[in-house]
Length: 181
Ligand code: SF4
Ligand code: SF4
Image (cartoon, rainbow, N blue to C red; front, side, top):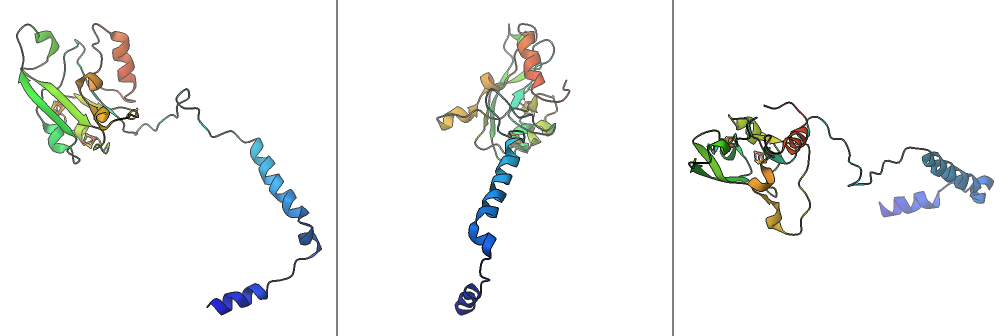
C-alpha cells in the first residue's frame, strides 16, 4: 500500500507556468478573504448581547407563585420522582400560623433544591407538576467557581412576589417564553 501511494506521488502531474507563479492561488485566497469582509459578523458580544433562544429552549427552572404571591409548590415530590437525573431534593413542612399569606396549601416546601450539575433540562419536572409550580425558563445556569454554587435553592428559584414586587415578578415570568398561570 505504501509503495502504491509513493508511486502516486511520483506520478503527480508537473505544475504548469501559472501554477508555478502561485499568483492565481494567492488571488483566489484573497477573493475568499474579501468576500467574508462584507458578511454580517456572527460573533455575539456576550453578556452585553444575547442570542435569542428558540421558543422550545429549556433552561433554568423557576418556582412559581400565584397572583396573590403565595408559593404554588406543595412539596408533593412528583417533580423529584419524575426527574431522571435525581437533581431535585426538597423538605416538606406544614404551614405555620401567621404566614398563611405566603403559602397556598397546608403543605409547602421548606427547602427546595435543584442540582444544576445533574440537571439535563429535560422538562419532566415541569410536566409532572400538578400545581403549575415549576417551569423551565429561557435562561441558562450562571457560571460559578464552586460546585456548591450550582445547587439552586428557593432563594434562586422562587420568583418575586407579584404583590410586593410586580416588576420583578413580570420580569421573571417573561423569561419563561410562554404563557403560564
Ligand atoms: S429538567 Fe429534567 S433533569 Fe432537570 S430537574 Fe427537571 S426533571 Fe430533573
Ligand atoms: S414543584 Fe410541583 S411537583 Fe414539585 S413538589 Fe412542588 S408542587 Fe410538587
